[in-house]
Length: 349
Image (cartoon, rainbow, N blue to C red; front, top):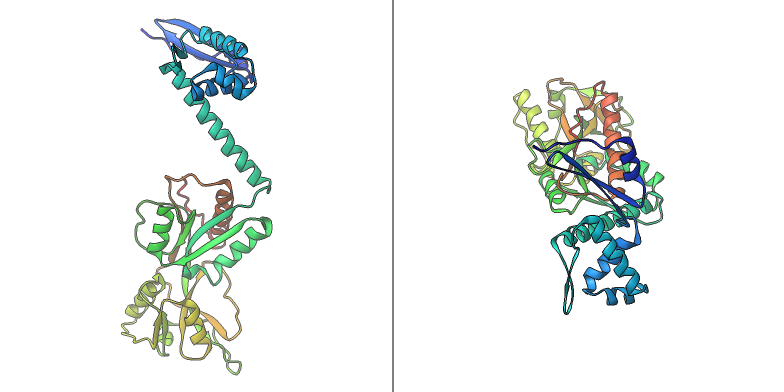
């Protein structure tokens, strides 16, 4: 029978001391507590690593500028504490035993993690310039994206933002391939290989040319919208899906005067008076104001919302800089959910 037990308060205190490593093991109902000093937090772990690297106490001592006898004494002491040999003494040098490999590999992993943590702390303190790579659907560009980026850059002016504007499928692929730290997409389809950490509803609104001589409405019906020439996104945009649904609801087969994969061009053509266009606005947000354009809500409660999703690859570990940037986007999406009068459903990592 094997018995398991917990550390008592005294043992926990000993474990937490920087120069002590307490390990409890159980064999045949008997407790064994080994106090192993000079590990991880001590110079001895570094000595051990150098012996492994050079295969020689003498060469390790030369590298470390420490006497070989001092290193050898600490090695013998550690082997006595562990109760196993950490090195095989061979005619032409020293080779790690299985136990020694476990110890050295553990130290190296610990040291690697410590270096990463130090680097991330430096990033937090603003001592190092970082970069955040974000892939976004172009529907986010006119209003949502500038608002969040403005907040982030105001608080973290030394961090660079690299933003790729792509279609929804490409956004997901960039996140999966490591070309982006996280992404924003309106894709209505399942997104294999990524998870959604936040989402918010957006709604279709009409974009009209401004006419200073005519009072323009804050909302129009779908029928009124399609009475005018239309300038709409092509099928690469989820906006087009919602436009097609709107047309089907009033049984209209519309023929747009222009389709484009550039929302910027669509806005310019509407501003020039060539027709009506569309864009999306977050739930609960006021209609935007822009020179040469007038925005109206589309009066049809049956139109489905467009869901903006923040996506990440759960397999990847992001830098602290990217994690901080992502939090800004998540907080902004949470604000949208609050304005819309509902609690956002979070799919956390």
